[in-house]
Image (cartoon, rainbow, N blue to C red; front, side, top):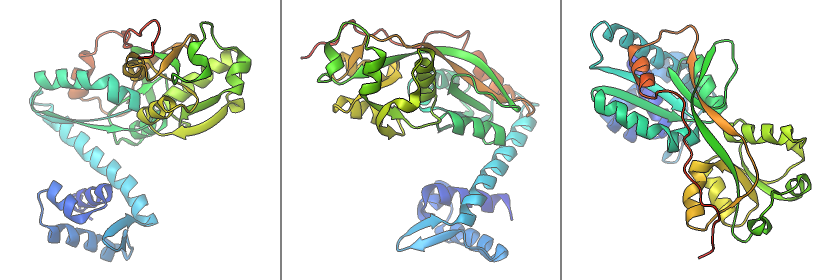
Length: 308
């Protein structure tokens, strides 16, 4: 088994397409197909099921994908460690971030870093908070950015910015016209659209409910969705209420697609995660210095959203 075979395997697995993977790696399709066939033949294990023109990972393929990503990440870390005996002109930094951070806060910082270090490549992956923590623990990513502190024996977590959660509903919702915060009974009787379990947004919201004596398990959850944009769209369409980042909600509130309900939700901290025992690269340190001290990241919301 070679590193080149693993690179090809990961590229094919992520795209579920041999030709597209070969093009991404600047290889002939026959070379990519031969690498996969060699892996399967050497270990007498099928890694992909061929279904018509599609391919899908088998159980063995899923297991190899996890290990292969970890191995390739470690190789990148080793290359980076050696390259840093020179200067910061070259290198690769692997970062993973939760959806809110990756979509609304992190990009401008990555662009600023890229302008001062144009020959350093940054690879960004997106997952929920639990997935980001796992990526740091397994070595797939060197830096992780999540909403809220994450505990783990091998994790170091530090605050890097602040964000505000807001309660929003569609313009036709019963809460859209109220001037006072909904009562506990209202929260329990209303329907909710929430992010999936494991997301930072949902965890912070459930913690806020617990502080006022409401068990999250008693909420009437009409739908769980895997992205902020999907949650926002469902609430805009009239399905219940939700708690999301002010950064996510602001454009829809400005355009009267959502209404900000006067209900106090806590600020939350964005945290950067690192592995406590792995090598700390100069590239990662350089990126972290561009952030400065923790600051508020939420936009100014309108006082009232008016129907147009």
